[in-house]
Amino acid sequence: MCGIVGIASRNKVSSREVIEMLKRLEYRGYDSFGYANIEGTCEKFIGRIDGKKITDIGSKVSICHTRWSTHGGVTKANSHPHNDCSGNIFVIHNGIIENYLQIKEDMIKKGHRFKSQTDTEIIAHYFEEYIKSLPIEKVVETFFKEAKGEFAILLIIKDDNKIYAFKRGSPLVLGVGKGKNILASDIYAFSNITDDVIFFNEDEFAIVEDSNYTFYKIDPKLKPVKKDVVKIQWAQKEETKEEYDHYMIKEIKEQPEAVKRLLTSLQYEQKNNLDSLKKMIKTSKRVVFIAAGSSYHASLLGVSFLNKVGIETHTSIASEFKTFNLIDDNTLVIAISQSGETMDVIEALRGIKQKGVKIASLVNVPYSTIQRMSNVSINIQAGQERCVAATKTFTNQVLTLAYLAHLFGYEFNVNNIPEKIESIFDQEDHIKKLAKKLKYKKDIYIIGRGYVYPIAREIALKLKEIAYIHAEGMMGGELKHGTLALIEDGVPVISLIPKEDRSIISNTKEVEARGGYIIPITNNPEINYPDKFIVKTDYELHFCIMSSIVGQLLTYYTAKEKNLPIDMPRNLAKSVTVK
Ligand code: F6R
Figure 1 (tube, rainbow, N blue to C red):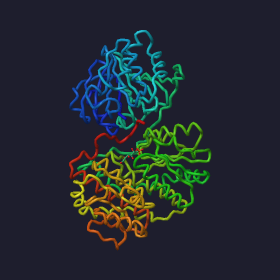
Figure 2: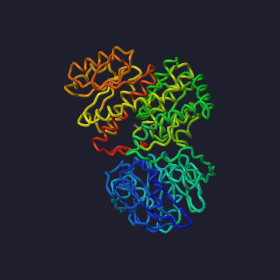
Figure 3: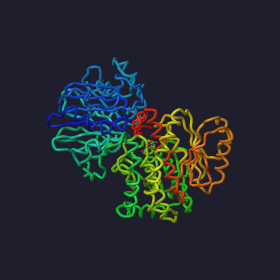
Figure 4: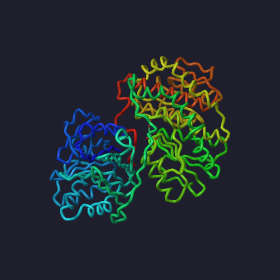
């Protein structure tokens, strides 16, 4: 994944100021970070970005990087920037060079010495090797030809006032400022500096200086291209933790507001977009969602809502989309992605876009790659979500999907969802008590049938990623086909029991008979267990959203009991920009 920033400025910019920009990209990875400038200074640190660790120096051209490790462990040597043998070339990279071993072997044969286990370091040596005899533009052409995989790369050379920027697959954008130009993985890195932006397209290369820039398309030779400057309307404000201990709890508590904002926006500002999407669905033979993680769970609910109103709908996990064979000219693909940058989703969309299939999307981040790839896009209006775990964005994805189905006759009470969510917050003390018990558990099972099954999976995902507890979200009916063997005395089973579902009561009893510790989430007054949660509603959509929020709170307080790094759990990142 990784986040990259580079700045070329007429006046010197302090290293700490550049690191501040990088801090906004920390959602892309937080294993280690580093900085380099054209004077040859290079510093790297393990752990989360902390500007105070960097020596406060000024430079007209500098680059910095936050890492989510792919090739090579979390070590200082593997942190970016990487440099060549002479120490003149510094490189930062987001993506993966798939054939790096081959290029590395070749460079070693040519006498280069490597200091890291990364794929990135080959770039510095490659340029060192070839710029001895060729102009850099020629080396760029051969690099694009030889390197396989995805990359957004920034390269600087000692005492040269330029940044060389390359893009294939991974996101890269240029912010055009007054007397300074900034390159970054996303526009939010420089949102306080400029509104004027140029998005890189595939296989583009740019040479960027303080007051000018030149873009080239690799085709396969470099051809200069004219680029449009886009004026950004900043719709999302940068969120802070305010009085909360963590972003996660703040974001959970923001849900009533986020839901109201979404509903208003769907009824007014986004009405035209929604009408276009409705028309696209009407004129298509089938709808296919593509998504990953929590967004995939939202899509499972989307399938259930749309099928209910007679629309043929399927969903595919983005990384498995290659095995999905139902795409034709009459298919409407709807990508669901909070970040709008998930590489697995983008990859799937690229393939079908080339075939001319229509693409719609539900995203939370304006100007994201997926939004820009779509024929029509709905913004889920959750506001910036900073905790790695999806909470308010999941709720707003589900609500947007239900609203879409509502346009075709799916029934739910649109207006009282915020107060229904508030009613879950009234049970917080109960949740905190339960968290004290759950923190000692190694495994938790969550069961649900029919439309609530995706919520079982979503709660399990939250418990795994934030509370570090192995959890499985299952179809209630499947338990007896194997997993029941794992139930013994005291194993917690969260059972999602909507009033009308008698079968899940039987499944719950089967677990209880084997010593399972039952935690029901239910709107059925007949269900009686000491640790039950009541969700007061008669609508299936409300039941889903409300029980998911019980799961979010339970996860939060369990992780808090365990003193875990809730907002930035180990090994993860908010935006998953590698395959
Ligand atoms: C879980 C979570 C992830 C994301 C997944 C897809 O809490 O946040 O599973 O849902 O990485 O991300 P987006 O929605 O940005 O495509």
